[in-house]
Length: 262
Image (tube, rainbow, N blue to C red; front, side, top):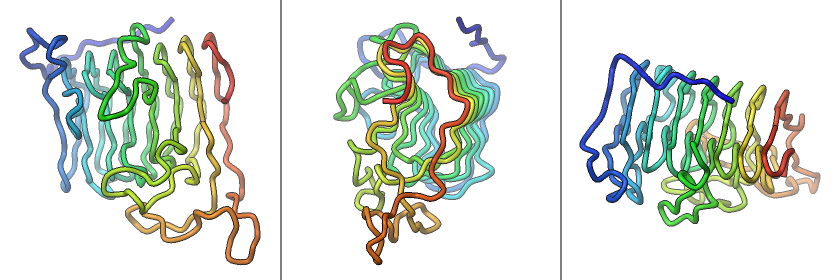
């Protein structure tokens, strides 16, 4: 069981009389430049289903932004993703509670996102069919509590409960990335950051689902775009698997239908 606090003294809300019929709420974003620093507020009835970029909290193309912080918030009842990190690097997503965010709780969007710290968050779906929905042309199975297309991020001490998949890295489904990163990244071959101390329980399919990932020794520019290293072998014909290998540290899966990495 999880005990979480969904109340905050600052409330961001909107019209929601037909929220469950229209699938439309409001969205927030920091767009293209500047910084977003949002702490200890409640966001409810947010997100716009099947509208690209319309998420409850959205870091949109903020590039390298160590000053970007989303911390201590409660994101409650979202129609399309709780927190999205999109073409943004070195942000802090920490100590948030995400409740019933459809499609995904926390999401790295295009595949070039890197070196963000995603830590100490609790992501809960009250019942998996509430959150497993088609979205943006994806089938309902392509979603999760933490859903990564950008792989090289720090995942530390998060808890994911009640989603169809807990922590999901579907690089094979997005081999060329998405959006502005399409054709400039190879998510199936991107190394993971530090994955440590995460817990996935009571998810009806997998807890941690790393899919068909083959991390390799990539060369990337400051925006996370790959300039070399995606092929299986290097220019000398040697195996290009990342060294040292990636580790999943101190992870705990419990009471999922399928426990352990798939």
